[in-house]
Amino acid sequence: MNNIKKLKSMIEECNNIVFFGGAGVSTESGIPDFRSVDGLYNQSYKYPPEVIISHSFYKHNPEEFYRFYKDRMIFKNAKPNKAHEYLAHLEKTGKLKAVVTQNIDSLHTMAGSKNVFELHGSIMRNYCEKCGKFYPLEHIVNSKGVPKCECTGTVKPDVVLYEEPLNDNVVNGAVNAIHNADMLIIGGTSLVVYPAAGLINYFKGKYLVLINKSETDADYKADLVIHEPIGEVFGRLE
Image (cartoon, rainbow, N blue to C red):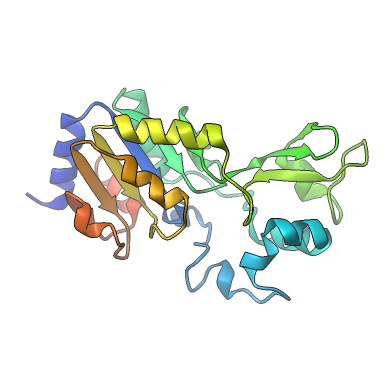
């Protein structure tokens, strides 16, 4: 039995599936992998990207933060790919109970997924740090320099920067979903970003499937490992 047939058989057998994904899910939508050779770490800026998207840098150098953020973290024309679409379809059938994602692009929601735990937040949500007023993505994109609220406060994206904690409610929801799942599909992630990657340790179910272009430290634990782009794999399940 080949890998696609095995995966299809596992999915048919299970009724409480959770998907845990990372940057590799969105690369097929034209969003560069943060840590790939062609990703953000390879861009030339005054500071390394991991410094720029830290909380302390945001506070002390907001102009440079927003220049980088608007230039390299927002991909307005990105559309859901076959991976996002298949997962939304699987949720509609009742088999997939949750998507847990490290991505901030909200493509899972755009594709139609309803129960999505965005561990690192979303570029689609932005709020004034002073009065709490909500602003859409367009406000960030169209602003000159640092985006401001009508109350003069700074409008901050609802994304988790380095040095910032994950949202407790989101983490708890993700942990419960993973813990109760009978099948966990991990896709498009090298599982090196913590604490997010540590959440998969809560899985106690029947099938652990890992789909990623390169090897990960969790490959040895998986019941099925497929080293291919996740969109291509899910596209062949339709």
